[in-house]
Image (cartoon, rainbow over all chains, first blue to last red; front, top):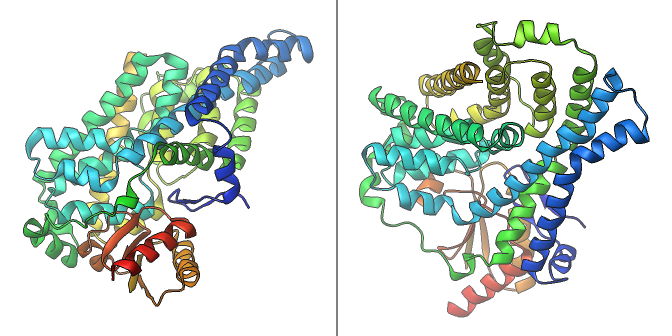
Length: 367
Length: 81
């Protein structure tokens, strides 16, 4: 029996997995894994050249050579970064339980509350099923709707996958800029939404929950001692997060890499730079409009984005497309509709989309 | 003993199955209730599902616990009662 999980990433560990974890000390396992990771990562480029030119003997500069080098070097590089980041974020999440985040945010007012919400939103999973109880829990403990919205917006907008890609291809400065812009956007959107009296768009029973909130805020359920996690539990949820992003989505991965390699090898630079380059000013909003209703796993989108980037697409445009594909999904909005009315959903989507467009333009202007 | 299982969409079947299996293994008299109502969930202070309460004590939140864990919690609750 293997490890099974659902869409929230909950896992039921089988006895077999426990045995695996017990084979040697946990710290040693992590060190070993990290060492292997670094060795492979450092060697990827030369390995790709070896495969392309020595093993397969492709002519330098040919279509096939380009595609193969991309296939065995660039795509795995970013995917490896993704694995590492997912692992770290998976462990971080065990510390940032919803209950703890609520305690940290409760009673915060003003700018500090918005900034904290935006920062906490980054490593928090935001799937359609976890969003609603979280949303209600926030409102119930008296956290203002604007701050809650900052949190909800920062989840899909600052994405660890995009971070991995930017770091792998452009270094930490660009990755840092992306994270900063994304969080700034979440803060500003939350503040603007708070001014629009968003409370009127709550479903009546939710609004009631919110107004009865303040006195009830202290009676959060007491947590049993057995809920406290050990380090091996935390590492296990890190590996679960990695397994979830890879195992559940391998078909996206294979399809994405194949499509990416094809684009890389066969689509002419002139075509890509004409429609997706910096000079076409209109392509950022168009990328977002196309991307929003689409949904694909990040591991599938990355190789495609990498390929178009290598062919001369503008970074901001490509990023905007990627963020809108992996950021918002329709099932998630359908779930949100159970607690908030349509105008607020449109506001939410609108602010997310507008933010992505702005981030896209800034990146196009800078790089 | 009353065991409440709070579920929203995913992990629901697994959580309920795990609780029922644990009750059987523990051999204790227990009523297993499934709570799907969002308002009730919010009032109970549940912020991530699936969540499990044994006699009003929250034992798991945001994950499906292992049956062995559940059995221990059920036995503990039974000995307290």
